Length: 135
Image (cartoon, rainbow, N blue to C red; front, side, top):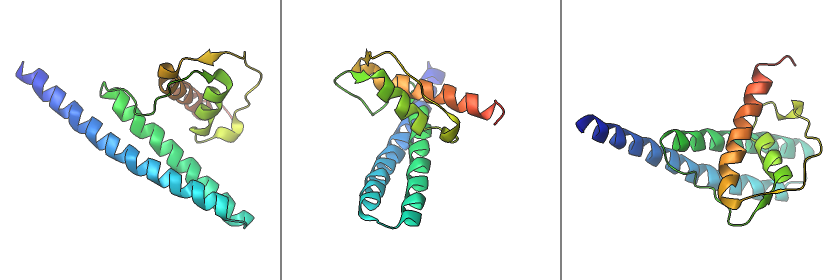
């Protein structure tokens, strides 16, 4: 019982830290989005896109900590989301996203409560595929 309580306490610490990181990353993504809309310089915009992509990947890793700790991801949707949009969101969370080609997918909706988990799962599979396959 004591050991289970200790594990639960450690898990809660990880969830708390990961959620705090998620809040900061969300704020950073919001700021980057505003900066991307304001800039007209193509070099600056390219730099902002790289920062945006890095921050998106950091958000996925923070979300992974939450999931590994047994908690639900904080990003949740109420309405179904098209599978193509879920896959595109997953691709955006992968470091080597330029190597991924998304082809036609069935026009089906993914239930809102499953969107975050499915996006995370697809992103992890795509990341693994790009890391362990030749360029």
